Length: 335
Ligand code: NDP
Image (cartoon, rainbow, N blue to C red; front, top):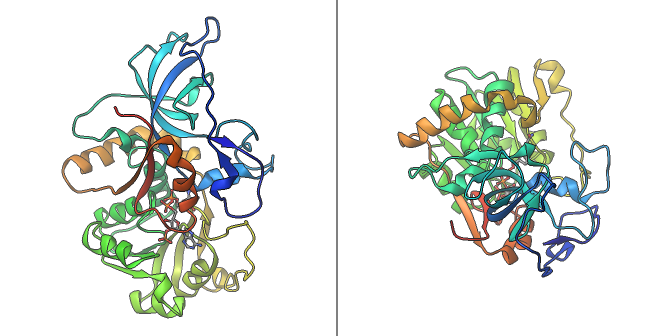
C-alpha cells in the first residue's frame, strides 16, 4: 500500500494505492535486516500526522511513493540479524505490505505464543493503544477510587481500555461514542456505568451535566474540539484532563475554536498532553496487569478485523468517520 502524497485534510482511500512489486524473500547478507511476513497491521489515527509534510512533527512524515509504515505483527522468514531467527513472531514498525524487509529492528518486540491470547491483541490490547490507555490513565490522570471519569471515543482502541482500567480502579465511568451500537457495547460489554451517543445530543454541555451532575474529576480526551470545550465546563475543581489525541480535528485546525479554557484557572484544572512513548519503561508492568486481568475475564477487548491487505486503506480512512467498532486491525495473512 503506497503513500501517494501529502495532504492537509482527512485522509481518503485515494491517498494510497496498491502496487504489486515482486521481491526475493531473503534478508540480504551483511544488511543486518530481517525479512518478515506481515500477519496483522494496525490502523492508528496518529498515522494521519505522517501524511503531512511537517518535519517538526513528533514522528517523521511518510515518504511519497513508498509503502505506508505502521505497527504490526509479523513472522520472521529469513534473518541476517543474530537477534532474530526464522519462525520468531515480532511486533513493531513494519510496512503495509505482505512481506517487509526490516532494517530498523530496535522497535521490534519478540512475542511469545500464548494460546489464551489472540495474536492480533499484540497490536491492540497489548500493543501501543493498550499501553497508551495504561500510561495515560495511571501516569497522567492520577486517579483515585470513587472519582468520576469521562472518556471520549470510548469504544475505540484506547478508550475501551481506559474505561475498563478506571472501573477496575473503583471509579464511576461514562463514555461518549458516535453510534447507538457503540453506546450499547460500552454499557453492556465494556462495563461503563453510562454512555451517550454524541451525535444524538444537540447540546454536549447538557449531556455531560446529565451524566455528571456533580462534575468530572478526570477527562481522558481522545477527540478535542467541541467535546473538550463542553468537558471544560463540567470539570470539578482540581480536575485533571489527559490530552491523548484530537481525532475530531480533521485538518489540525479547529474552525470553532475552544472557548472555555479560562475554566483551567477558575477550577484549578490540570490539563496535560502526553505521548505513550515517554513511558515505555512501564511496559512490563502494563503487560502484567492487563494480561492477568484479561485471563481472569476482568478485561475484554473489541477488535474490528478487516480481511486482506487491499482493505487497509478503507480501514484506515474509516477511523476518521467512526466506521471502526473497536480496535481497527487488518489481517494480511493467517497465523
Ligand atoms: P479509535 O479506535 O478510537 O478510532 C478513532 C475513533 O475516533 C473513531 O472510531 C470515532 O469514534 C472517533 N472519531 C473520529 N472522528 C471523530 C470526530 N470528528 N469527532 C469525534 N470522534 C471522532 O482510535 P484510537 O483509540 O487508536 O485513538 C484514540 C485517540 O488516541 C486518537 O486521538 C489518537 O490520536 C490518540 N492516541 C494518542 C497516543 C498518545 O501517545 N498520545 C497514542 C495512541 C493514540 P466514534 O464513532 O465514537 O466517534
